[in-house]
Image (cartoon, rainbow, N blue to C red):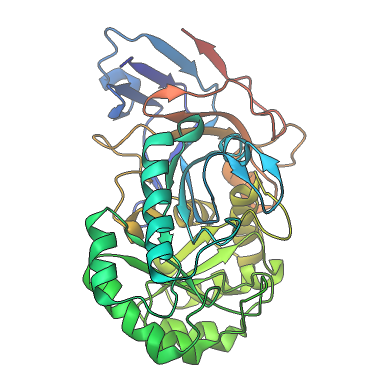
Length: 387
């Protein structure tokens, strides 16, 4: 694998909410991993095969989308759209987490079919990686009749996610709580749908249900598309250990309110960001960038913390090595800046005033995937690529 240096960086935002920035103007990548972060004067720059001159732009970890609904391949029958994963890459997303594959045509609901679809989706995306994006798919849709042995079988096949409870056949809270216990004992991460109904078959779920089930994530608390009452979100923070999720396919005002609530409680580490895409509102290639701007500008949250909600917080939730800029981690990075014409001087300033960031490039495994985003405005600063 090639080596790379990103130099003349204006700011390095780490994705670690406990240490959101780091001093330095240089990142060196070797063999697909971050090798060095800091001042160029201290870096080993020998045998570098490619160079990015950031020209004062900002570098973030590759963004993670905590809530997508893939099917198989880079196609969504929900919106009849091709290459939606590649489009999200052009919005800085390098990792996606499935919240279930409910849009699969003819989705089976019997236990054998549920297991087959879950394992197929997991194994397919483990090999496919559209445009290099890491898609963690195969989130089991809970249906009546699934047994603890079925969860053991799926876990042995590598399944690590339970789709948002409430959009499939299991509606009874006690049944949901029992299956959640089986899944969590096997190391699976469990999401519960919250708020109003989103698709046919889903329903209204509030804090009582979430508290009883005790999931790992309370999905789209700002609505998918109808938001929870803020008092319910506070109960979830008080009475569970679940992360609270805000998404693009939801109520914009409520996204800011949830973030502000978490800030008042000193629990920003429990907020994660997703798009809930593809959905009835469409495919949102810039959805993560936009939610970061809502959280910062409407929630009064530091822009660097908003970045962590879309990177390191999600990585910590799912025990992933990505999402933080640190030596030894995978070199999944995004070079961003204030969009051309912004009133802000830099990327973090742009988030603070509600602008959607401009993406110069997304890097996965130490390889830049494009040199001009097709979905964002150009950067204010002229980022230069040499190879």
